[in-house]
Length: 374
Image (tube, rainbow, N blue to C red):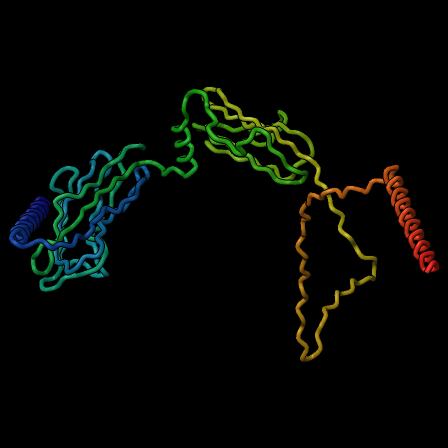
C-alpha cells in the first residue's frame, strides 16, 4: 500500500515538474517575440447566483481568436465560499487541446495550461476550460473569480493580445423582477412631504361637453401613493410612483372637483392639486331624413352637345360710381313788377306821340289851304 502511494506521489511530482518546465519554456519563448495588435476577449462565464451546498459550472470563454497554439492562466477564488471539484479541457470550434494540465498553486488559486498538437493551431470561439465548483459558504456570501497571469500564443510563438475579464458569484436565490422593483422603490422613498411639481391640464378650470373624455396627470418630486378623487370620493389609486394619470372617458353634466392627493407612506405627509371640471350639454343639430321608400333624386349634370364649346359666363361690369361735384350757382335776379314809374313813362310817350301827330295834321291843313289860294 505504501509503495503505491509513494509511486503516485513520484508520478505527481514528475507531472508538476514537467508542467513547470513547459511553462517556463513557453514564457521565455514568447517573451522574445513581438505582440500582435488585435485583442481577443477571454471571459469567466459564471452564474450570478448559486445554491448553498450545490455545484455549478464555470467556463473560461474565448471569442474570435486566430491561430491559437497554446494558453495558460491562473484562476483565483475565495476558498471559504467555493472549492474546485473538477477541471476539464475546453474546445474551440469543436477542437480540443492536445495537451491539457492544471494544478493548485496556492489555496484558492488554480493554474491551467494547454496547447495544441505541434504544427497545428485553431481559430474561432469556444472555451479554454470547464471548471466545476461547489458552494460551501453561507447564503449571502460571495466570491470573485479572477483571471491573472493569462497568456495566449500562436503557431509562430507570438503572444496574442488578450483582454481578460473576471466575474463574481453569490450564494443564494436569484431575486425576481418584482422583488428588485420593490427594493428600488424602498430605496427611493424620501422622508418629508411630497411636492406635486407638474400637472396637466395647466388651467385651474377646464371645460368639456357631455360624453367627452378628459385626462388629468401629475408629477411628484418623490415616490408616493396617489389618490384621485371626484367631489371627495376616491375613484382611482396609484401606488409607489412619481407620475400618475387619471382619465374619465364619459363626462357627465355638472361641475366637478377633481383632486390628486400625493402621500408619502413613510411620513404620512401629503400634497394635493385640484381642478374645477365644468361639463355642459351638447347642442344637437337635427339631421334631415327622407320618408320611407323615398329616394333622393340626383342633381342632373348639364351636358353639351357634341362639338359645342361652353361659352364663358360674362362677368358683369359695374359702372363706376360717379360722385357729383357740388357747384355754386349764382341766383338770377327776378325782374321787378312794373310799378307807378313805368305807367308814367308810358303815358308821357303817348302824350308826345299825340302832340307830334297834331302838329303834323296842322301843317298838312295849312299846305292844303295855301294850294287852294293859288
